[in-house]
Image: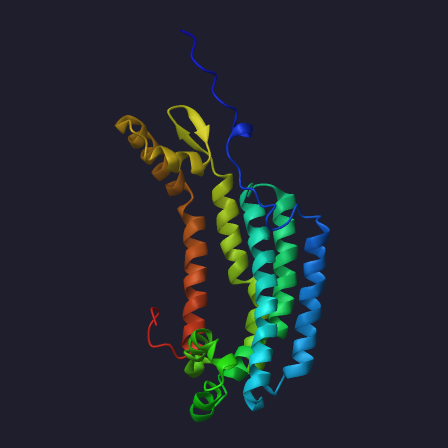
Length: 252
């Protein structure tokens, strides 16, 4: 009896990202980038230094504008990262992700003031604002934002931290992802990427699981210095920021 031919990798299921954009060159994507930049610049000009003084209807309107740009940035960021994850070792996808992240970072830096100024609203005034139905609609989000009232830094420092993230913490995380994706693991004489090895860890055959676990430990062990450097750098970066923000513990 003839065994059915194995399907090539090209026929395996792949994410369909067309609900977001048709591709990196999609005109809708470029339009959203331009729209995001315009809204961010307009909001900064319109609201900087004024959020805590807005009437309830105007505050609700401002939050609605902020919500709009968050939806755009979420869509752009999700697409760029998922597109990149389809092939982490592809330099063109990495370049695309970086360009989108930089655009998101630029817009985000302009809007750092928004949540900071929400936290400048005094408790009594905030309670009064919530009596307005339009503001009360956003209460869960506002409460989450105001949980950070005691850990805010001055606006100029918050902006610098945000602007630098694309070349700091985020860059180290991307380095980890790409370094790991380039590794190859020898399982029973067959070289494979980490995704295939991790898949074998749940194989029905105990011997396959054992071979995969051995290959995983061996290769990761050889690269422990690089992984330790990345992890320790991220941990130190968090410790410094936690100290600045006066968090009592890393978990806080």
